[in-house]
Each structure stands twice: as C-alpha cells, then as structure tokens.
Image (cartoon, rainbow, N blue to C red; front, side, top):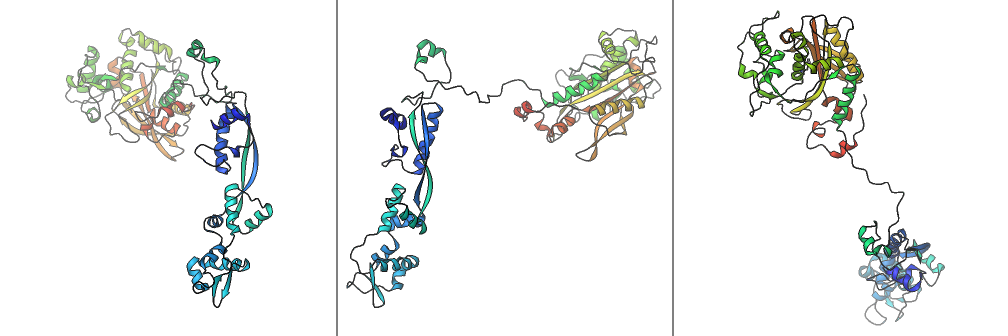
Length: 524
Ligand code: PHE
C-alpha cells in the first residue's frame, strides 16, 4: 500500500531507501527493510502493477565489538572516564584500572588515551589530563550504524575495517515505476469471470489475474484400479491365452455340501470346524442339493463306491445343509463340474455347454464326444474366499484364490505339471518344484514351490492335484474323464509385485487411496 500510494503521489520511487515503513520512524535504509520491500515489489510486479530496477550497494555494519563501542564508548574513552582528574583523589594504578573496566579494554585503551593526551602518569598511577574529550570512534560507530557508511569516506572506513569494528555488507535498493495494471487498490485480482460480475458490470473495473500458461495444473480426478484388480487382470489374461473360460463365482455364501461334501471332504474334517470356517446364522440352512447327486455323495462318504471304501463314518444331513462363507473357490469349481457332467447324466446345462464351447480342448482327437455326452473344458476363476484365521501382516480373514480346472479324457499328473509350468512361466516364474501333499479331494496332490529371487529361498505358491473319482464319478463323469486343478493366492504375488510387506496396506480400511491411485500398471 505504501509503495502504491507513494507511486500515485510521485509517479516513481527513485530510491526505496527513502520510504518510511509503517510503524517505523526512520527511512528504510537497512538491509532488512529492503528485503521486506523486495517481497512487496515482487508481489506487485507479478500482477504487473509496478515495475522495478535493482541497484546493488555495499554498506557497512558494526561488528559485535563495534556495537559495544557505539553503546559504551571507545576503549580509550572508557579509560579516560575511569581514572580520577588530576588533584582529585589518588591516581589509579593500572591494576585498579584493569579491575574496574576489564583487562583488555584497559590495556588497549591506555595506549590510545596516552597518544590522545587524555591521560598522564602521576607516580605509579594514572590521572586525567584533558578535562573534556571527543570520542571520535564512538561517533563513527554510531554514524555507521545509522547510515551504513561514513561521511569521512573510504579511507576512514578502511581504517575501521582494519580494526575489525565494522564490516562490509552487500545490499540492494530499488527504483520503482508504475506498471500497466497500476492501481492504488491492493485488492487481490480476480481469478474468474463470474455471472455476477457480468450482470453487475463489475467486470469492467475488476482487475484479473493473468493466465499462467506454465502452471502444471491440478491432477484430474478419476477412478483407479486397485493393485489386486490389476494383477487379477494379468492372471485372467494368462488363462484366456491358454484357452480357459471363466466360471461364475459370485456366490460367496455356499452350502457345506458344495464346499466340502461334493469334494469328498469328510464331515469330521478339521477344516469344517468353526475355528476355520465362518458359518452363517441367518439363514443357517441351505436349500436341498439335487436329490440324486446328494444320494450318491452321501453314499460314497458313508459306504464307499466307485472302487472306494468311503469314510464309513456316520453321515449328517444337518452338516451338509449348513451355510457358510466359502473357504475355497473349489466349491464353485465343484458346482460347475457337476453342471459340466449334466450331458453325461442325460441332462441339459446351457451354462456349462457355453463354458465348454469357449474353452479349447487339451488333446485334440481323443476328446471328441464318444457317445457319453462328455465335453472337455478348461475353466478358471479368480475370486474371494473366507477363512476364520488369526490376522497378521500376511493373513486376513478373506483373500482371493486363483483356480484353474481342466477336465478331459485320460489326463495324467504329467498334464497337470505341464499346465502349471506353462502357467507359472507366463507369470514370470520359471523355477518351480512340486512336493507331494494331501487334499481330501485330490489324489495325488502336489504343493507348488517357486524360488523367490529376493528372499533366495523356495516359497509355497500353490496347491494342486487330480480330483478323486469319489468326487467325479457321483457327478456322472465317465471313468476315463480325469480332472486336475490348481489354486494359488492372488495377494502374495501382488504384494511381491508392488513391494508391499503388510497385507493391511493392500486390503482393508488402512489402504491409502493415494497409493491405489498412483500404483503403476503391472505386466508379468
Ligand atoms: N482348494 C485348494 C486350496 O484351497 C486349491 C486346489 C484347487 C487344490 C484345485 C487342488 C485342486 O488350497
């Protein structure tokens, strides 16, 4: 405001050091004052209200010693002031003087005081010789302090610099002119032309902020795919490349029948206990499963069949009808395999037909319909499962399973291993090993281990196996139809991909939206 009003009155400001800042008595000659002025000049010139030129100066400021002299007088003046006048009291000994004004000041000051003829010796002591003195050094200090220089000129300044009482300081001052948008109003310029301005006519007198074409702009809002979804898409593409069709898996709630019984999981299996599985209380009971199939499943459990002795344990209908959150997507695979076998049972299932039609055969020629209605299929799913687990940095009560299932005639374990090698290779994992394992629904079963290049050790990445005849034959599949499958987690490869060490920063309420928005695309 001061700058604008001064410009308004005088047209230009020839030297900003002449301005008197608000709340000050003296002109703004100091370095600090010019810094404050420069801030205002920059702000005004960015709005093109003013233009200014910069001038460099060298001025002087007091050193701490100089400042002390400005305040208390020079050393020689203090010596003079301390000693008694001739004839008034006893002369002061150098020791007494040192005790009174300090050793350094007394020593340095005495020499100059003698030279100036301000003091003289009397016996062993000192007395005043001059009745009045002119403390030039103190005056010079005060002059430098207020003006930054000396009227005496460079020679006098150089002398004081040598005595380390003053030092040079670079400074700036400015010449200010009116700019194209000059006005005495400091109101912030408008950034938008509004309807109100147009209707009131205020736009005619408003000042507008100039467009900044160099501005980077604000990030645009938009949806972002969660890292899990990005990795899911990559894996989905691998399956599609390999001729697989995606199974519908939106039924998070399943019956124990499809999650366990149809898979030949014994009703006494520990995984079925509440510590491992979430059961629903409302509704608690599923609709009955298809009656024929139910009869066959319960029979193979209780009494055996299809070459199996079964579990020969009591069968509970109540157990099979329990509703639960599916513990694996193999529940959905079982239901889809049952549908795929519909034609073998002499039934129709358009949904399974469509999936079979979309997935290529594995071994052309052998797979043709041999009159029993069977059609080969390669199916996959990637979806959520739920387990009643203790949660920690790598486990949550829900996660995603990636599952592949292949049904064809005379498939062998070698086919399963071959499929998995191709599949994992497409995920960038070439180094895999298999270890015999146990699943109630597959025999043989294999755990899959991959060599983790960062951890430098083998880590378990999946589980697989050949589905048992006790599971497949009650569905109606011919004996030569074999089905193999494998399951892997989605979270672990995602965490490795994105370098995430705690699952809570990937899933759940602690995930930062920002990290999701900025997570890069992923390619295997
Ligand atoms: N259901 C198994 C699991 O949850 C994975 C699997 C799928 C195993 C298909 C064999 C066949 O770990």
